[in-house]
Length: 418
Image 1 (cartoon, rainbow, N blue to C red):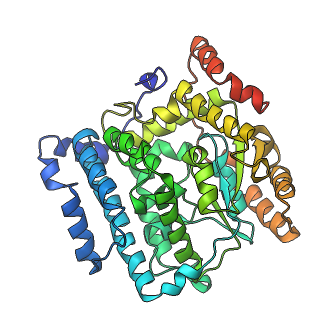
Image 2: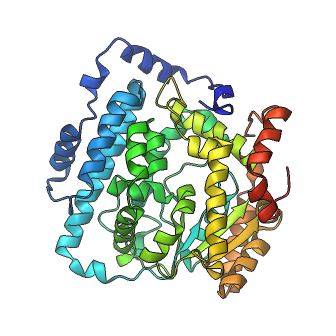
């Protein structure tokens, strides 16, 4: 644990969750809920009746991930049940994706044009920005339900009424039911946008997604040495499938770890655009600790072991990541005309004006229909309708140390203190 995560305090669990975990405490839950690759692979194949997973680049990461989940994640019974279910979803989804490609090779002819990637520190308004952009009729973010159930590929005529929306909502809403306090921090619903981390999960190369399903330090160490273009290529394969029968003019996509792989992303998506909201990093980090501790508390009695999520919650590691991007901007490795910066304060104060500035910077036309649709979402989804997020902001001494770590980042982008 780092200084921030060591001060995190878990919320009370719902009684039904606590009772399930108590029942599992004396059981052989590893035997009852296996997480070995053979069990997962055979289970997915039985469910789908399919056997072809495509290329073999997914197999090694799955094997390393399963070993790490089984030996290091310290999952309780509820955690193992949920994690097995979600890993099965990914394997079943991959089998179905490959089956659709085999029967319809023309899917690969789809062009993913000018995607918009929202990047940056978690808890800096990135989810808010994606949700608003998604309401523009020219844009579309992948929804929870279509990532959980990508096949059959969604169709334009039934996209808003697909019966998988309700089923997907029930599954993703489990995050809210198991840890109800998460509602104050992040919205989970079947019809809401989902981050790229889950799409990257189909390649079994996703740091944030699998750290959310269990603390997996061995897997993370292995993944750190891998070429991100492998996962990004499969990410693009999934997007082509999803837009095949439901065309999208601009995908709107998000993952906090995209910050670390923008040069590689520009190789896979040569016409990509990036938007980076900037918030007081010390305040955002405190909020991230609250969210991520709660995420892990939904699956283990001992969150933040082995440095889990330190790349997000440790100020020195986070600052190192931000400073690396500054170096890439200054060197030209990341073209300045592909990256737009906005301040969190401006986004919160007037979201449509902040987005209009982004559209202007990218040379995109912000139509009146698009402006009206986004404004309607802002007007009908005020933040005040959700419970207040109570978080530990830390001591003045701790915050002073954090601000030293983040000084270069905060000065470079003129980010105000909160």
